[in-house]
Length: 534
Image (cartoon, rainbow, N blue to C red; front, side, top):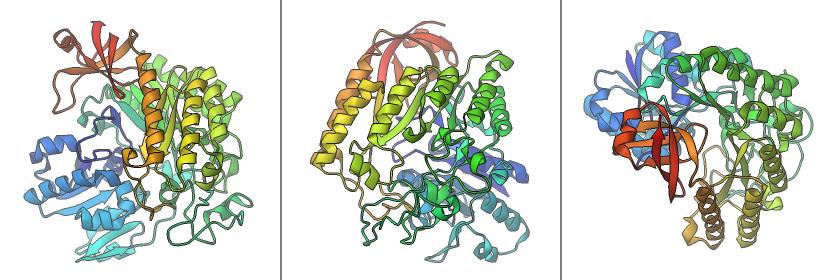
């Protein structure tokens, strides 16, 4: 059996134009399972397949990794597959949390829900030795089609930390991605989320938290279960339901993976986690699961050991590396942990979820921290040399004009506190989240409250982007994304894409880090600049 994996994560309907310099870890994890089992396979990003469908030729099984928003691209890939093969089609990633969407709408045969490593291993081993597909009914964490019907098996119990560390993401497939040498490569540091509080907003089916306290008091293992069956975590997020409580990968596994990626030519890495400050906290509560977002406090020794080992690779390889972390919960940020982060990650961005400016709305959403805590965290992190990005969502359940006004004010305060970017998302209900059955939020221009929030975000980001003009940055020169023209630059440390004006001169340095001077703001997501020297 020859298998092709297609990475469609973040592809949407027209391509991932805002985040094309990011390579996630999910598809590489699937590739690692196939390597471990000895299967013959290849991995291609969606844009390569759409531009050259012949890449699908000669394979027996199609595997696609995607999110719910990627359904248009996933359907295109499925149609291309049907022209060259009638082989089995398998889908995974966040899109699979809605089996109807993954199997009926996208027309796939099998979907893996949540953590896929153990279920995928069991599936492939049985597929090799079985003459039919009857074994599907016995594999947990899997959904499949029988004619027009969907069968959804029980979810597989979440892997232990030891089991998680037994799987290694593939390194060799990284070279299949456009501009991989300049991209920010995600390396999973922590899986799952420690926030097992519940949203307090009444759900469409009538369920509403009765404040029994079971999700934030008592034994940590009891917080898995809600008497009203309200999914855990922030109401808009499905991570706790899909991937369970936080579990840390070992330092050795993380360092070995980054070493392999450096040897492949990569230089920029993000230690991925719903909350990087959960790293090592799970060790402090074992054998109980880490289902409390605030206690115990960060495991500073584990965090410092990890960052010291990763940063030490610069000396080992004699190379300048970009090392950053993904997200931190404000409830875990204090002076001591910020001091450690600043020591190793000075000048790098860190994302802080604020989501709403209303304290009461924040609690109703099931958030682990309040806007006040978020503003305090931004100040502390900025003081220790990090570059905070503040995240918000418009159109959330419970949003009204008063919430929007408070959110607009907190956005102002976040920038004053040191946030260098306001990232705004539109609420989209995710399967297996508490808010799964709410309608998708309307566009910001069609809702008064959302319009207030979006206008403030645009205003602040325009001002913040203006600060880039005149700066001289180290940046990677890369060929324009497939379908584009010329060359572009990505700041080595952090920042938006830079469209290069002196194209002929810049094209001599593709794959190199050069000095680029920013000359103007193109949009809230892009700058324009000129190459000065290699």
